[in-house]
Amino acid sequence: MVGFKVDDKVFGKVKGYPAWPARVTSVNGKRYGVVFYGTNETGTLKQDNVFYYLTNKHKFPMQKRKFYAEAIKDIELDIAKDGGTDGNPNALDEEHPEEQRAQTKGNKRKRQSNAGKKSSDTPTASSKRIKLQDANHNHDESQNENTNSQNIDTEINLPMTEETKTEETNNDPEHDNDKNFHPDGEKIDEITEAIPKNEPKTIDKQETDETKEEIKENPYYTGEINVKDVNLLPDIYLTAITTYAERVQDNSHFYKINKPDAISLDNADDSRLKVLPIKIGADNYCGLIYHPQPLDIFRSEYDRAIAEAKLVQELLELKAEIEVGNLDISDHRFIKTLNCDDDYVVSETNSSLVAYKKSKLQWLQREMEVFKLLIEIKKCLGLKEAKTQDALTYMKQLLDSTIEAISLKKRSFFVDTIVRLGKYVGNIREWMLEDKEVEKFEEDASKIRETADEILKKVRGLFEYGEPADKFLENFDKDCEVFNEATKGMSEAEVFSLCAEPLSRKAQLELIFDEQAYAEDANNADAMYTPD
Image 1: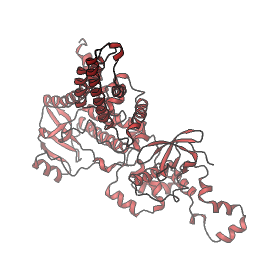
Image 2 (image 1 turned 180 degrees about the vertical axis):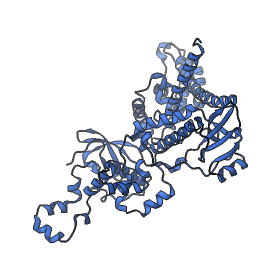
Image 3 (image 1 turned 135 degrees about the vertical axis):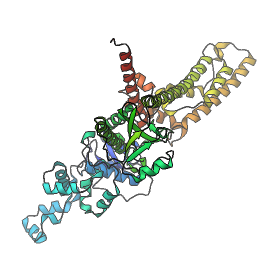
Image 4 (image 1 turned 45 degrees about the vertical axis):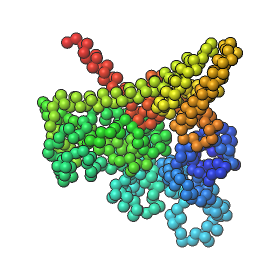
């Protein structure tokens, strides 16, 4: 029986489900931890229920289940990036047993069966892997030219232009894997031709009709634009996009198996055109349009982050040209004149930062109110006495409050407390109550238990476990373990300031924003107190 290794690409078989593409994440004897492609769910499987992908994919028929086609596509992309191997050390033996037997029977058998044939007539899996390696390391010039002649957008899983899609369709399918090969660990400044130029053909609805037509008709916008029709971006925003992409690369596996994150601090209600203002004189500005591509063209959050970082890099390079006096910019993103002055630009760019800080502060205040209510409830139900009516008042307020899943992971004691309230019976023996008081207390205690059950039901609705209610606590504990692992490198202040899942785009950009804003505030404070 074959033993599997971490990062092997396999099929995992769970009882009641079809064999599903997966990646081995841990090994414990003959039990293997796996993460399933497509769904990103995890599990632990016995060795008998794990099978190498390439040598077994013909044995498992294609499924019509949701996410299955996506899982197949993702595992094959990962295999291509690993040089065409799923990690099976015996892949050649298992894929081509007839060839291996033929080689042991001597040259006579070979002359009879292969007379007049060249070895290149029958490509094997190993020859394809060598071709991939050659394409990557440039050992063969003609192979390298052939590889470069194809628009290798899929090297980093980025969206392809229409021209590239046409070329890919017409190319020999034997070379498909060459285009999919891409080693991990590349830096943003090394990514060059793979990312298509961002050429938006539509402009946001809030622009004036005249501006729309002029931008559509001209290769770059040469007229004035009403500065109130655009959202002026602070430099700190573009820096955050670049820093985020670097963090995504550092944790590439997580982001490559997750869809583009639609929830983000930069997805505000403001749908105006985003423009980077550039000062070219006293109260004189031009601008560069920042218009990232729509999310639905990206396969993963990794692809989206790298593409946006590349776009930011291009804008910053154009900005550097403009700042040294080159205004002859033939680029569709260039706005030659922004009719605004220094005060307006400072006010607008600062207002976006203020709006972000205000929004986050309000979110954290709402979160704190929820936990304050929980603390008040616990105070009302002490061991020495119980103010049951007050407790019920606070519990009803809690039931009506907005509770966030991420808040419960940050402070998991909330769930434990609600579960205990669902079993509340008080301390009647110690309180020496009269019969009427006991009757009243038991009535209130029953209401406390009922309200606690309602709160717990509301909490369960925040998590899509799809399991029976009695499994909720077990699944919640696992979620908390994942959360703790994801935040182990963060300070306590960073953890408690989270408003989204720690590895989400929103959370990471907020952390970067907070770091940069804090550094900027500190620099400004130093400047104020620096003697002339």
